Image (tube, rainbow, N blue to C red; front, top):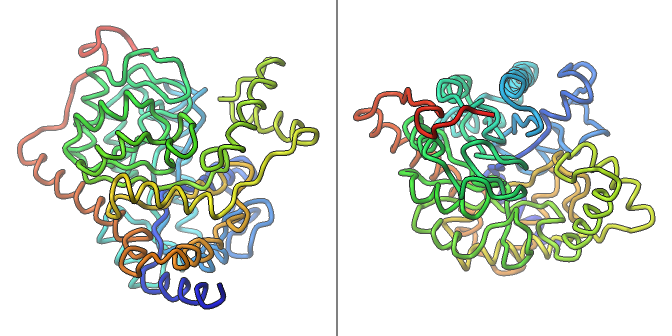
Amino acid sequence: MPDALARAHALLADHPLVDGHNDLPWEARVQAGYDFGRLDLAAGVASTVTDLPRLRAGGVGAQFWSVFVPSTLEGDAAVIATLEQVDGVHRMIETYAAELALARSAAEVEAARSQGRIASLLGAEGGHSIGCSLATLRALYALGVRYLTLTHNDNVPWADSATDAAAVGGLTEFGREVVREMNRLGMLVDLSHVAASTMHAALDVSAAPVIFSHSSARALCDSPRNVPDDVLEALRDNGGVCMVTFVPEFVSPATAQWREEAAAAAAAVGIDAKDLTAFQRFSSGYRVEHPKPDATIDDVVAHLEHVREAAGIEHVGLGGDYDGTDTYPVGLEDVSGYPRLVAALIERRWSAADLALLVRGNTLRVLRDAEAVAEDLQGVREPSLRTIEELDGSPPR
């Protein structure tokens, strides 16, 4: 392992990691109201699992920062909170300008590397963030948002979530128009959190490669948040990337079973497990008498190898979901843990070329491909002015 770990650090120095999903911005909002004097990321932060020293130790060269807001927010409230999250990330980048650089393209990711800075991309987690408005989608793109997760834990009027009751059978006509407009903009379509029917519908519509910013393999852990094999096969044909996540409930069947039991116990006292804040508060007490099983690096390795087998090496990446859940696999407790994962893959005889694709190359290729599709579409399509009322025949809820 020591030799493998040294090789892992060397590989990440040559191919700085691009991670698909980190929820530090929400923690900055909750813990400090985006006051980076109170939450000093340069000094090291005990109350988060992400800060600048640990990003450097982890070999992270580019991070998609999630501008998540809870899906319990709707309409104007969701849009306003998302804009505050976007502003918070911009302020974070400005505060630590010597370490972070805003990146809106694959070229800007590479430019940040040449400057010795960590490229900072933005991803919006849930279609509720656009308020059923394509103009709002375009405004988020103009502010630097480079992916939109079509749903979070709840359905939106135009798309079904993985963790809600099916309502529209995947995507409505307006939902398909959202995907088409994202393709025209060059914004990545993120299918984490969506129902399998939504995954298939989006893959059918999208002219550009899609991503799963933080999902794992359903064949190994039967969670609705994970990706079925038939979708992984379609992802290969689409050219997209599944960025395997580290969330224990999505990589360990034992932990997934524990979460089902905890969710049932929470429901018995009137707490919805989709309400992340309330459920995490409940589960912290529930764990006292019902210990939560640990996930391991080996669990994550198994998912990476399954996605590689089902979709191909060109279609697998990493999306840790750091600061977005309450526990992490042993050995991957914070963002400094990536070299340990790469070392484990080296010991599994992953080649340097395959590891370079996993940690960086695949995600940058998808970004470039989406940009190329957008350039072509902008030559033949104007910005869409269609509305949900026009396309679906019902007002947004």
